[in-house]
Length: 175
Image (cartoon, rainbow, N blue to C red):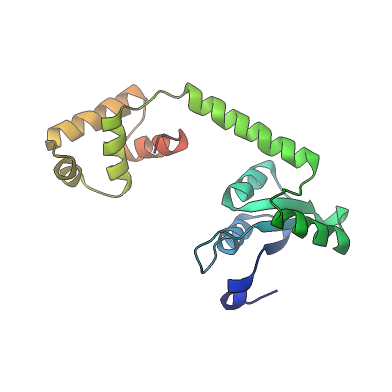
């Protein structure tokens, strides 16, 4: 294993874990990033992996998953080659899990109410941490207009506050 500072020439990252936890997900996210700005494919080898952490791992850059009890060194080398060729070495059951989760997410997004362009603009700036006054100034609207836009979104979507509105917009794929 290369120390982090020597990984500039790495072509793939291999993450080994007994169980995939929040800490493992942080390592995956860091391993996927590369000093040159390019994304590094990550191959994950684990003893145990929940459905939630499988989907999260893939979203962070994992291109292949192997269960340690089912693979030997030759399998690992072949999986690394496959990952470098753009394939996703993964047990069929895990592939189905990821695909099913993607279908659910897509169905949720297609059923979600759509935000209009002005609402998207306002929520984008709120997500960046701007105050109501700063959003109004940036978009050349009055503060009252910004407050009305936020109130309308929050009311229409049955949310509690602007933070929930931003989170909802991100989850629904509109931000």
